[in-house]
Image (tube, rainbow, N blue to C red; front, side):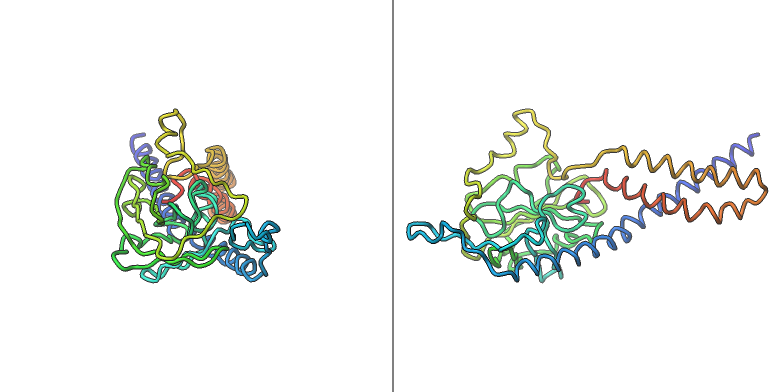
Length: 300
């Protein structure tokens, strides 16, 4: 009896260890494949959008109207916000609008309630450091003189490294608007951990632009006021996902494995049962990993 319990415990620990290793492999390499596919699609769409002739707003024909940046004739890639290029670390990535789990799977994300790159004030971006292509993996290497180039629908803007700091995930004041024109990059710190956030700021060296016609001109209240009002913002972690899909896929994976084991035990053809059940189990396990990864902070 004791031997059976010890043997069962050993097998359970081994299986758990294998699952953990598979999940780590999925996080480090599997997520990068999906990210590369999404980036290829977004880059093609955004390039097509930038190539379209701009449409001059009707109001711009008035001699008293202040000139505004021209807008593309059609939104080919509505979720595309910009292209970020950092020569020092070899980063060339499409920036998407939003910093939730789904957005940051596709690329670097723009915090929606901060300024757009190139505009007056604080434009903030978030990116993964160890998963989904890890675009911000090496931003800690940036220093004085290093430049960051951002291309939006309004043009290309040059930023220069200004400072870096490490804060807690709740320090959302780094996203507040500022009197100077800057770019704020946020990611998890240290690598392979979500305990802290690394913040890199850069100063806009190009001439700032005026927001497009129709854009909100009233600055958003400081993030610190949200906490004072009792709200529960996602902070610097981005919006998470529901646990239901992860639980459902986990149960299905367990059922598939137990079914393969039971059929093999009852039929006496254990290895045949495992050969048939293993591919199905791996597919379900992949879906479980995808759902479980969505529960982690968006910019890990």
